[in-house]
Structures are given as C-alpha cells and as structure tokens.
Image (cartoon, rainbow, N blue to C red; front, top):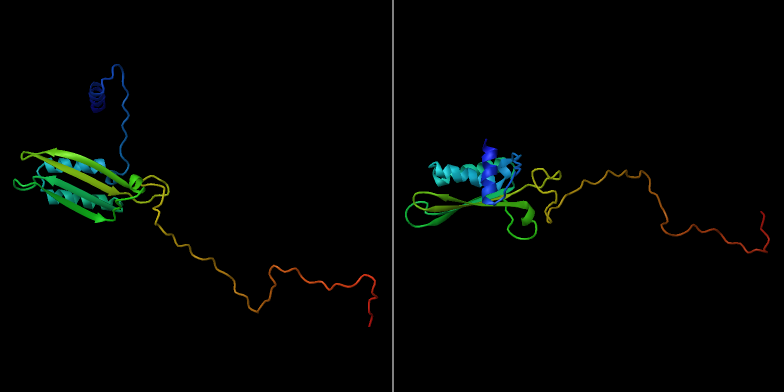
Length: 181
C-alpha cells in the first residue's frame, strides 16, 4: 500500500533500520492548510493550467473555507524568458508581531516546468476559534468585543441615600435628665 511505501522511503532517507511506524491523519479543513493548498496549486501548474486561473481558484477555495485572508505568490519564468513574480491577495493578512506565529500558516513549494523552476508561496490567515479546531484559541491583541449592557430598572420616585456615612444617632449626656413633654 501507499503507507508502507512511504514508510520504506522515510526509513531509507532518515537511515533508520528496523521496523518504523508511520501515522498519517487526514487534514480536517484542507482549505485552511497552506501545505495542502501549495501542493494543490503545484499539481494544477504541472497539469498545464494557466497561472492566473490556478491561483485565483486556490485563492477562492481558501476564502470559502473560512480564512480571514490569504496571499499566493508565484515567481519565476511565467511567460517568456524574463522571470517575474505575481502576487494574489484577498482578505486581511498580518505581517508583524507575535500573532503571526500562530495566526498565519505558510508554505513554500517548487514546480519544475520545461522553462525552469517556479516558486510558490502560500500564506493563510486563520480565523479566531475559541474551540481551537480551525484556528488559534488566542484572540488577536487588537480585537475589541463589545458587551451589551444589562437592563437597569429605573426608580419611579426620587430616592435619597447617604453613601459611606454612618447614620447619626443623637448623643445625650449621661447624667442629664430626659425631658418629658
């Protein structure tokens, strides 16, 4: 099977002797996996699909999968001898700060074509997910959540209260007689 072939290739490459165990799991949301999308774009380009059409297809699939934003860069000899770079961007993408480490998924792949090598970079900005299944649990630091205020019951008649002061009790001298009326 394919799994045993992969295990043999990995054991040869890593020079591991003896039995090796390979665990493979299907990606839950492949639209939010940069590696899967870079490979998908690679096979589209190897199949002879036009660069723009392939990139916009991948871009649309990523955004429909629920990503906050994505960026696809293809560079190399696209048409003619002169190498150039094409960038396709959609949505929101953060480039700096600590949240980049857990919000942006990046992948780089190379495609060997007749004319030369094309480079593919795919960056996907994952959505915030409190459960942590499709995105990071940690919200963005600049994220502001507005909480609805609680309903307060308004008083019908004016009320006067003294805050912080103890109620004053009239002080009477100890030995003085109490006046009676």
